[in-house]
Length: 329
Image (cartoon, rainbow, N blue to C red; front, top):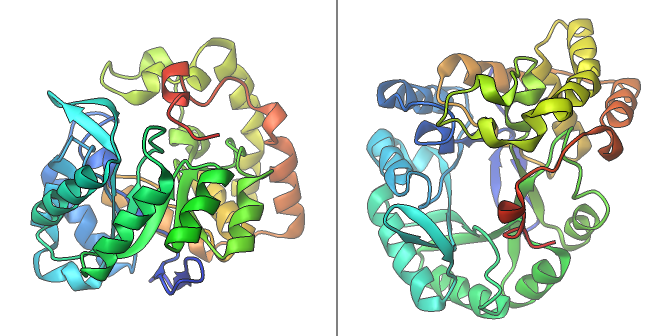
């Protein structure tokens, strides 16, 4: 099947109904395989999965460069989202930095690595509490007038930040973690996005792999795998979360589908303005993810999933305290 497109908010940005998170091609989930990653990117374009998500900090820098090498003449066929907002020192994140001069420098460097002259969607990766969001939005507006950026987005931003930014320059999309096992946006953020006509781009829509049905305990992952330090994969949290996620496998069996496809279908059924970006570096998983768009869930399916995986049924914090400190809530 070939994916159809969706309107991501009311600013005119139209993207494939499911995107491709590219971070894992360079970090976090085991060793990189450039040949397979490039083949996966090319297969994504064939399938109409053309909304590609990257960032300068992925690698750092190497993920954008990978996309630049892989796309070549196919650049016009895809929508590229990338991000600014971190200070990088000696290859590591050393804090946030959204000063206007830093944003301009990051964008120019990203354009060079991506081998393009425009970024379709530019996100602030994390809110910088030392820089007024109005200054950030104003800088992105300047870049938009210069033709370097087409649309503006925020990542893990709270309602106050979103309102202030949108008042200066229209926000087309907010990217945040949202999935069957991470529902923190439902009370405040999602109603605001609906009010302002802003699209939602859920990252980690498969619960960092947990909702695929193949999750292992934290200690069973390699030392360089992010899930080894994920609180929800550890100890009694793991046991409780496996039990809660059982409903996903049950509904998948009823639809002759994979559990991960049900998790993605749940998001697609939540709103036409939601576009999940499951990450993978393998063609087989990409094809499986794209197949989720063909699954039709009933109202009873949706209710069962909502109830079994409500916020009070999931055990453990989503991040460590240090990582949560970067989330604008």
